Image (cartoon, rainbow, N blue to C red; front, side, top):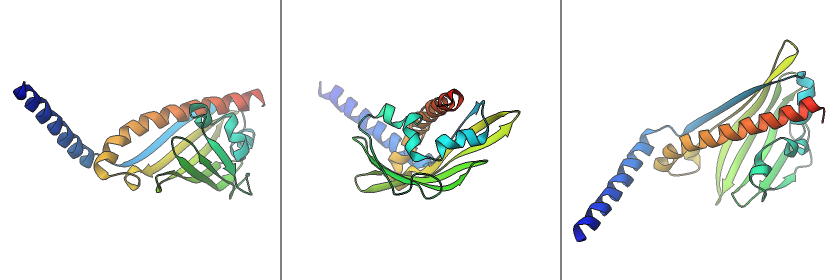
Length: 182
């Protein structure tokens, strides 16, 4: 029995060491990019993206985490619009840094947990062609800002998969809002 326990413990230690080394070798930066074509002009899409108070109708966050409580800044439309949120899964903040009805919006956001900030630079850009518009949603950041290096490298692929799914869902919701004229 002691031999089996020693083997199991040794295997666990080896697994932790290999995981830490793998995490140190993997990149900690991420870039998420998802696109969807909508049957609308950029200006019709911009109405939903430029106003932070309209985001709950299409953004997937509150649907995935009902504990989110959003507080809007003094300005909610256009460059300078801002919001903060609290939730059981962590807090955050978001500020629109650029807003153009023909090309889209850019924003900076940060996830905040236990006093640590994980900043990200994001955008939703519009590309018009043949009466439709392709909306491309991107997010870039570095999880090493938020967690230890060995863990950050292991988290990046998991984060990519989770965020791609969320972005796809958000774009589908936005398409529904835009194309239904809501």
